[in-house]
Amino acid sequence: MKDIEFPSMVEANNQLFGNFMLDLYHKDIMNHIKNYYEDEKINGYSMPEGNKPVYIRTSTNLKDVEEQFSYVLKTTILPTDKDGTIRGKVTLYLAVEPSRVNETNLPKVLKQMKLIKYEHEEVKK
Image 1 (spheres, rainbow, N blue to C red):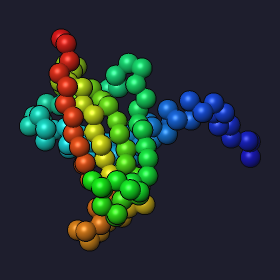
Image 2 (cartoon, one colour):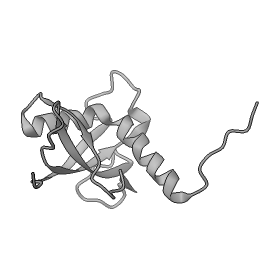
Image 3 (tube, rainbow, N blue to C red):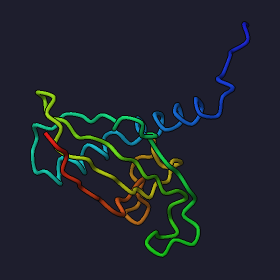
């Protein structure tokens, strides 16, 4: 078997990790965006220029996060319509428990993810 190369630069690893986390929670992120705008025309999102995809921290000592979640993710995205129109700039704060992503039939008290905060900002058109 050939050696598998991984990026040695921290910045490249951080960007790949951020993209991985966005992929992992894509369905939930899209549901929150569609609920906020109350519009099914929204079909995706992009990243603001120069923005890191995801910031992450442990949930320890955060009063807004229940102890059932290990991490808090913060991401800033640009929700877009099917025609490419950007709806705004959105920052999401998500409490997540990655170990539950593939679990089915979880008790209601054990969620995979919870929206903590949703910030919307208008963008110039």
